[in-house]
Amino acid sequence: MDHSQHRPEPIPTGLRGRCPRCGEGHLFKGFLTLRPSCEACGLDYANFDSADGPAFFVMSIVGLVVVGLALWMEITYEPPIWVHALVAGSLSIGLSLLLVRPLKGMLVALQYANKAEQGRFEP
Image (cartoon, rainbow, N blue to C red; front, side):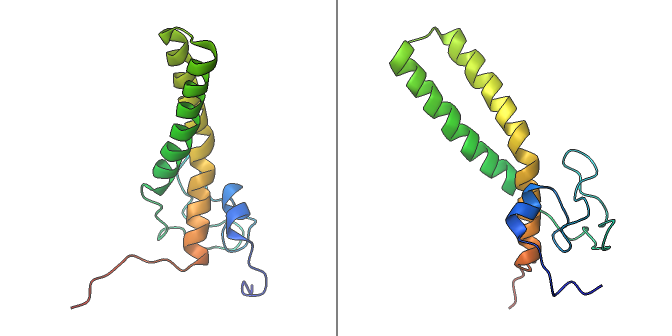
C-alpha cells in the first residue's frame, strides 16, 4: 500500500484518535494506551511517545477556563466558597477527561507528520 499519495491531515486525524499514516485504523486500545500497531495499514506505534505533552496542554487549557470562570463568578455573583469548589472541581475533572485523549492523539499524529525523533547529543 502506497502511503505517500494520500496522507491525512495530522490535527483532525489525531483528534479523532485515528492512525496518523492511513487515517483509518484506531490509535488507542484503552483510554490512553496506544495500540501496538494500526489494524488497517500496520504502522508500528511503538516509537511514538507524547510524554507529558498532553498533560501540559490539558492543564493550561483547563486552568485558563476554570480560573476565568471563577473570576467571572466572583465578580458577578459573589458565591460562597463551596460553590467555587464545586464548580471548579467538577469542571476541572470533566474538562481534563474530555481533552486528554484527543490531545494525545493529536500530538502522536504531529510526531508522525513531522518525523519527530528522540534528541541526541553528538560530540
